[in-house]
Image (cartoon, rainbow, N blue to C red; front, side):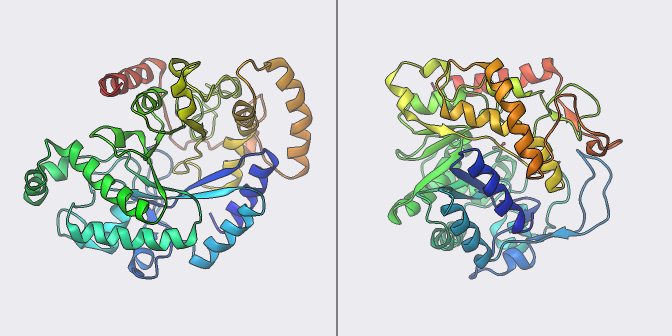
Length: 395
Ligand code: ACM
């Protein structure tokens, strides 16, 4: 997305009374933020040789890349602030870091050069746990803090595979030196180091719910994405949470069961499913822990959304339903919403938002032949069950 695109999206957010924009700025497939001290992060890490067409589809053979300069970010942050929107940055570590390792092989576990990742999915290349890597990230975060006045800074923490730490003598030595039990606790130690650093600068760490798995410092905010489970576990342990449940508000998931949904991914989350979302999980409602819910957040992950027109299609009108869930009490009135939405769609038309029609994609909104990864309901339930068993012990 060029700078223009988040600026336009900020206007659309303001129109829907949304007040926080969380920007996921780094991943295996690209590092998208200029860091003055480490120019290779964008000279090398912002560019990949090619991309996949759809989910694990053919390689397209076309280089892709780009990044936001620090001036771009200052402009985005100021533009958002004038619309009462706080921009929360995310530097995702220690997993999802292949682009950073491509730029700085000394951050990795293998000591060999890697390419910026060109394929989808969760990679095994993660950061090492050396003191020099922590110092590198602290320096990165110091520049991030300079750019983003947000009280919250997200350090990711999601989907960090532990294979390389298990195989690495240096990581195993670190576990012993620190008196830790396992790789989960090593990840917690890593996150805690960054949280402590942010705290010395007066900022609060946010991380995805995996950061709960090996214990978490007080004061950290949990962005709960795997259903409601992480939210309940985190609130019971005294952490503030943001409810990002992928069972309700992951807007990269498909909007209907039809095969013509453009690059169908995940389970079906129709407009009505988003409207039925309640930011305070049922298990917390009416209890003091409910106050731990700072808010809710919907995700527009873009690995399968390769244009801004497609962002419009995935985000709207579900974003309007989401806005109501966060700004109104639980007893919402779906027929009333539908009636008001039909007037609202006229506004979206007038300002050029290419939302999804209730009938499905218009012919030019389809992506014939581009493979997705739609979840079937039984497989989806099995996934949720496996998270449940992981997270139940934490409650
Ligand atoms: C996530 O969806 N990996 C946070």
